[in-house]
Length: 126
Image (cartoon, rainbow, N blue to C red; front, side, top):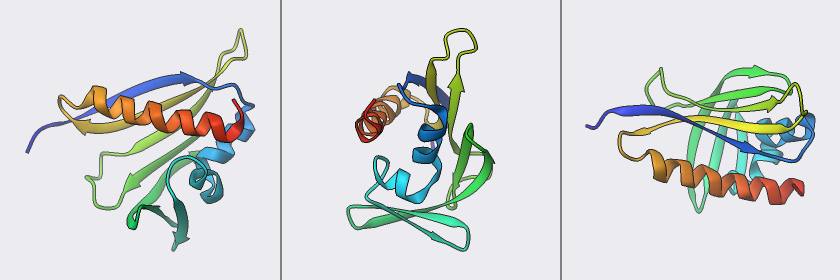
């Protein structure tokens, strides 16, 4: 089994932090760009794609700033996190995504997230 590594990407998003956070944290917002549908059962999010589904627990939230999920079938110390970051000087809004992947797969994992964020930008009109 190959080693898992943590990576982060930061992508500018032209949106208010509050609107962006709604798309990152609510089932209806996530279904607009991240997956086909989301159900919440016993506090866990069930993400659905093309007939398959994956369950994640919400590990941490900071209102209008950050949401961290952990896939229930992944190691305890792995998660994926979406953080809304606002530049203090320019007020530019960025989405910072932190995730884990197999060593050597960082670029393809980053490209997958970049593609997903393009869907997010279209959904919010950014």
